[in-house]
Image (cartoon, rainbow, N blue to C red):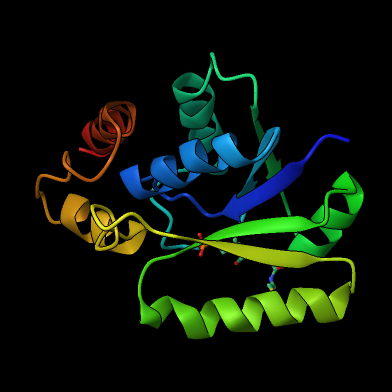
Length: 162
Ligand code: PNS
């Protein structure tokens, strides 16, 4: 039986930390489904379609990595996909409380759902999408934290905005 996992997130933007988790997950599972959450936060820097486009370009030759998007509850998306294992990355103890709440809530919503955690590689545990958003909005250089394609798309977007 195929071992599949859903790796959900906002990925706004996708960071080197996310990429590291995805590549490691692809070594543990037969299939890693990236669930890009279509949340409509005013604070977003990239649209869901732009995030999906970036993923598709970055992982275009990786057969095990499937790019998808979802709207609404994660528990419902998982149910629809019939893949009940959720993967989340854990960077620091600060992530723990939020992740515990999410994992427990998802399991209460559907008993079949299990969340597993992958500890962030020490090289990436300081990276967060919100920090990167700040760096970019304030004109800093985030190139060490994000894949080149993300940097390119963000630049295009910021240039368009003027
Ligand atoms: O990368 P993020 O922003 O930490 O990802 C959080 C995400 C998108 C996985 C979470 O907010 C989510 O599952 N959103 C969908 C709505 C939902 O199901 N909320 C209740 C979670 S228990």
